[in-house]
Amino acid sequence: MATVRIITAMTIDGFLPDADNPRMRWLMTDAKGVRFWHDIGTYTLEADYPVLDLVCDKGSTDKSCIYTAEVSDLDGMELMTRLFRYNIIDELVIHILPEIAGTGTRIFQNGTPSGWVLSKSTRFRNGICQNIYRRKA
Image (cartoon, rainbow, N blue to C red; front, top):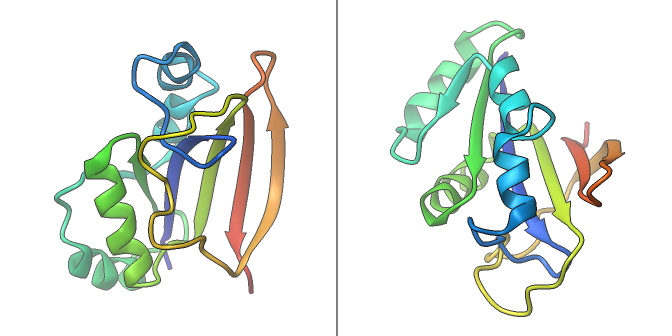
């Protein structure tokens, strides 16, 4: 069965960082940031990807197949919401930026997802922490 992975970033208080944020720009362009995950993924999910097709494809593809969805704007957040609704996300890669936004768009607008286990945490020199969560077995 294929893996569905969400890649996103948020501030300490849970908001989507602005695209012009220097740390967000680093995250989007550095080889250790979002690019790394796209390079090892098999398919990149766009905001308009039909989720029902993914539900069918996920079960029919092999374990090495990875579907990656990047959540860096409102379109990506809508896709993530649909993937959560169908309960098909296997892995969350959340980059936490060491700052407080105070306002903006919350990453988890419909509540914090439960049933996840931290499998790896990495801190980069610029203060960004990358946490990888996998669905609880």
